[in-house]
Length: 302
Length: 322
Image (cartoon, rainbow over the protein chains, first blue to last red):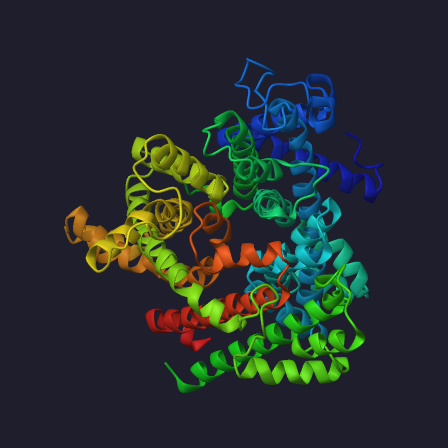
């Protein structure tokens, strides 16, 4: 490697690539983390291949009038049918898409708000910092479910609103975590040195603070996704899901409303629940693995 | 515990409460154009009737007047009238609070006892088959939507086996009273309480496990062992009491949140508490009811957060200095 001729930027990238390679090497040896990754890859593949492995026409009541209702698995369609004769398998496969998309998008909204609030309130002193810190504490106290219900009821049921509602209610824990980290980071000698050399606040935040909190943000992101997906499930179950694009939570609502429990139609309410469980478990395993790799203090435990 | 510490915490709690009260008003007013028009859609009302209804629901006057009136009424615990039943929101909430408190209280008690025991066993016998088994179990229950777990238990034990009723709080047909009525209610509560216990258990077990693992690295435990104390004594007298600290505060904090967390589970079992009331209000939507419930749920969290802070200061002297 001719490090002599390389520019600082190229050097920095080289260092980052190497750090990433090291982290992946550690991750690969983390068995629970790899299991989580495997489960997640399977479900994402299923969601992406939805048009190939199932027929979207089976989702619409208009096309299923001739199908038997409440058919058992394999009697009709791979996973039987519901009270309208719709294929449960098709609903399951297409529902995976909605659940994953809502969970991921809501997480991104929450992480962006949480990181910005956390960095700003940790980095600056004075009124802005105090106000943001208070706001974080207040939002931590407001019980998530009633707030989400109220917001979703007022805004109306649609995917975009669900993403907004879950995102706007899930950011405070990220903000608190990031803020605590930034508070210790900004006292480090290299930040002081950079400031003494005349670096602006924007430079300090962009070049020193953000890169150093990003591993924590990444681990927090993977641990927020399962919470977002569970929230979506509960909200959809309470009737706040998008009626035209059914997620796994919406499937559970429809199964409950149609009386699947009383008929013991397990093929209708079992698959969506198992799907949610698998996704939540996968993200929790991945997130915990990332946390352990990125935070050396946790490594010796377990 | 110093007087100043308590005063500071109580004042902070009041500030949070004030924020929630204001937030509640704007949340509903900003987005909602005209609830009266929505409610009486398709009915021909004269202008006078319309104005009278608006007055009844406190929707007349300017925003500022509405806000002042809202503050005054909220201070008197007057949350307005329900759109659906036309009864005061407060009396509906009051009636429905008891079943929820009983259900959530019993579930919290059971889940903490069993969660802490599981956590102790897994941490003390770390990396044993027992540890892996319990950690796997708690991970699984943590990953399930709580109401789905409720559906599974309902189908298995109520629909298929018929051991328990499928929902409600009493058998409407029977006119039992006294002991047998209590027994009937306990019979109805078994499945919802089991669901919530299993749903909460995982968090307590995981927190207790990691807290005890931290405690086990402390020097005073090595000293206790060096003194020749038996393993059980080291665990029960030296390790566990200190490791319990974070769990105790978690219980206090969670108790505020679980009041509203049981919405979906109460719906599954038609348990007539605040959760089912929220679900019914949502179907309307019965806005004054939702508003009142939101205040009650938030207030519960604030009160229990305050209790958790004070409790922590009593139990752990290090906090008071800060």
